[in-house]
Image (cartoon, rainbow, N blue to C red; front, side):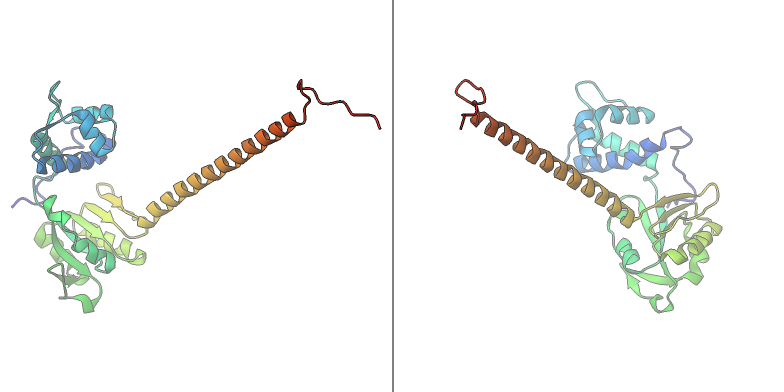
Length: 258
């Protein structure tokens, strides 16, 4: 079985922009859904809409893969699934270790989407001795003392950190020293890594804060619109009142003498 140690994706060497790489999983998800419905071909407009991008950007992204649709027919769904999977390195087995088996780590271990997308959870690791041997998602938790041996024996190159913030950097350092070159960080802290090590950070609190910003902005816009509407109504009412005070020819009636 091929492992992450013996094969690496070719996206960087082929000069594919990082922004395009970030969109490839979106295309793959949309294409997989089409494949499951036995849809043979898809137009750039349909696929772009399903992936949430514009069609011009999609066609540009696919040009980096050397994939061009057929006019009047579109893209071959199965071929694109294979092509993007190969580019992302998903046609091989990627053993992954998850370090930190608290609520979040356990939830990640129970996520069923890893195996179907080319990732195998090789080990669950935690610093709590009481956790050692306990099964989570059918996998016995192992102590952090065994981390280096686990990485070596399983050929692991991808590590997931789901520890508290205070322990994350130390865990990161040990993963890197043991040979891990890609890290998915769920801990609420910024990790320092040497050149050649890729880190992707997932911070749910930051994402919620960004959503809160947008909600606050929308609320402000709605409040401004309400004020503007009230002002327009008041001005209209004032004008209407002024009109009713005018004479029959539209002139303000003269003041009658006492």
